[in-house]
Amino acid sequence: MAFRYPGGKKYNGSRSHQTSSPSNLFGNRGMTLEQDLNDTNQYYRSTGKAVIHKKPTPVQIVHVDYPKRSAAKITEAYFKQPSTTDYNGIYRGSYIDFEAKETRNKTSFPFGNIHAHQMEHMHDILRHDGIAFLIIRFTLLEQTYLYDASLFLDWYFGQKERKSIPLQDIRENGHYIPLQYSPRINYLDIVDLIYFS
Amino acid sequence: MAFRYPGGKKYNGSRSHQTSSPSNLFGNRGMTLEQDLNDTNQYYRSTGKAVIHKKPTPVQIVHVDYPKRSAAKITEAYFKQPSTTDYNGIYRGSYIDFEAKETRNKTSFPFGNIHAHQMEHMHDILRHDGIAFLIIRFTLLEQTYLYDASLFLDWYFGQKERKSIPLQDIRENGHYIPLQYSPRINYLDIVDLIYFS
Image 1: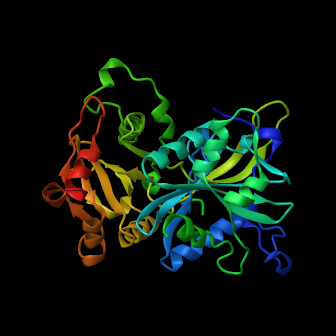
Image 2: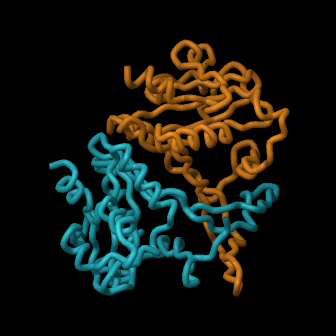
């Protein structure tokens, strides 16, 4: 099950622990989508608006050392493909579930960003009347959109010509999420609009 | 954030990959609660009854090697305390959330099995009208119970004398989950009884 991230992309989880200098506190300079979402979800939890967490990165642990008088140390482990989306929780009494992805593509969102297991998972959630969507950031365009999972699955399973969703469709049928100070990306406002009105 | 499991308890995640000999296919001999729950949740997903997953073990990754032509290898990492319960998902349109714990104690369930963050998390879920509970296995007694999170939190916050919940109370106010062939621990039958009837 161990795998290499596509294109040799490296794990950037540790970037979420870097300290922010004033120049990257705003304007999407140096802040990843994951950092923005962690800040936003923290804001939602602390204000009692929702309980939504990112799941830990799945890791296959092969070897652990147990030195005396210090913490257990994992000395061999590999990244695993996730079997679900990264984020889930509860909002307004409903189950909510989403995947968040950044792309450097300027014209479309490639299917390759989402694993087969994650597609199946979103399909399952929709069947059980849960709320499921993607949050997609086009990093070079500095634009973030919420895009319903059923639209995504329609593109993926409904045609064979394209291997990506055109940005034009995401603009028309998704919802732009503006960048703010706090919470940074207030995606639950969009969720209210789409799923609760 | 790195920590040592209480009492020097070692990570047993790899035990879920051991092959089962006929002698431990039933009767709680060699099957951990985690294995039983993984089997059960797999059954629920494949039959379309519910979508419930265990979250990955949270790990703080410190160093990763990226050898050419092979998988990225994590060479230094530490276990982190979980900030939520281990299991969540959707059932009958509702958000469902639980923690599963084994104890070798024969008379009570010690609070020390549940971290402070997990208590807060269960409290948050209840406030948002989610379903939250514990599944507790007394391994030496070979008995498994479902125990509502609000009862657990009442014990924890409502008195200061005891540092554990008496088994007697779990028997009276919790619900016994019998061991079966498939699914092994059909806890959603109990959920139907408590939360949907």
